[in-house]
Structure formats: C-alpha cells, structure tokens
Length: 235
Image (cartoon, rainbow, N blue to C red; front, side, top):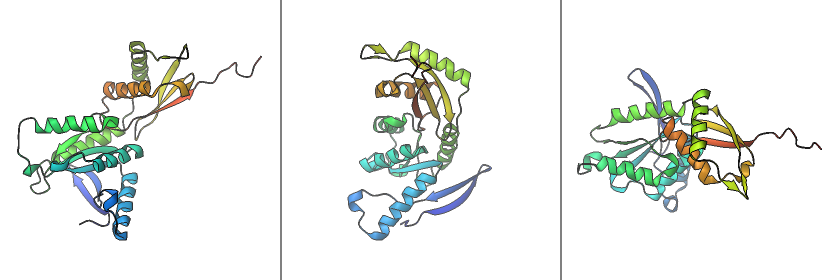
C-alpha cells in the first residue's frame, strides 16, 4: 500500500496535471504505527497544497464518518473537491444507483452542496475520463470570478426576497457585497452589526450564491465587514 505521497505527471487531452497519490487515511484509533502516522501527515500536507482533491470512497462503504471528516478538511483548507466512488464494477448496476449516491452526498456534505460525484473502477478503468473532466470542471469553478454588475443584481434580488432579520428590535442593514478573490471564491459583505447577522442567514446567502452563479461543490467564503461610521467619535 502507499506510504509516501507519490507524484505523477499526466497529460490529458492537452492539459498538464500533477497527481499526488497519498496514503489512505484510516480512522484515528487504527493509526498506531509511527510510519503510518507519518504517512497520514504526508497525506494531510498534500491536501493543503493541492488545487483539486479527489476523495476516493469504496462503493460498499461510501460516506463513512472518516470520509466526511476528510471532506470537511478539504473544505476547511478551501480546496476544490471531487468525490470518486471506486469499485463500481463490483456494484450491481440498478437504475438510479448513481442518483442515490449523489443524494447521499448532498445529505452528508451539506457544506458543499452539489459536490461532483463520479463512479469509477480502478480495475477496469471505467469512469476515469469522466473523473478527469470533473476535476477540470471543479478547478474552473474554484477559479470563478463573478462580475460586479451580476453580483449587485443578485444581491438586490436575494435581500429583497428574503430580507435580513431584525435583532433586538433593530433590522440589520446590508450595504453591498464584493468578490475579494478566487481559489476558492471569496466574498466580503459590508453591513451594520456584523456580529449580529445569524449563521442561518449567512448560509442562505452562500447557498443562493452557489445556485445563482453555478458554483457546485466548491468552498465559498463569506466574510462580514462593518462599514465605517462617519459620525463615530463626533459630538
């Protein structure tokens, strides 16, 4: 089995990739050998420096707790993510099976709604071209920049359809939003009383951004910043 992260250069349809094959990450209680602990550290380091992370699941045991923890780590590190379900050749091919797996991904990985999921077989090579295309697409979304005009139109419509709530009898005022950077898409929302905006409303804005601008699966960062008060400190 893989102990060290192995780097392989690949040319796929005229595009160049460097793929890091890492050691598999087992549940923490089973990692007891010193060498294996180093392998885990090496794998985690590869996640931090990757642009797209492919989380490889076993079709018979997909979305175990450990799989969700790895996906959480990828999201926290702000990497693009693709789910690959391996050993598809061993699965009984029933209608709607891949759809059920995608539904399961949506239920388990709520922080990355719409994460791309591809069924593959390392034994037969089935699905590998689809996997590579999913990686290319995820990378494009991770690098996506939204035009200011489109962002302003979305912001007005989203806050009109679902205005921010009143807190302690005072309605929160959302002024405007800008995209600060990509990789992953990151936005800054200027508002009053940033610390009072409920997490549920922030999730609403993030999910609306994701749906409106077609950014499935990728982490989205939304930072709140209070607009400077020109009258602060004045009599």
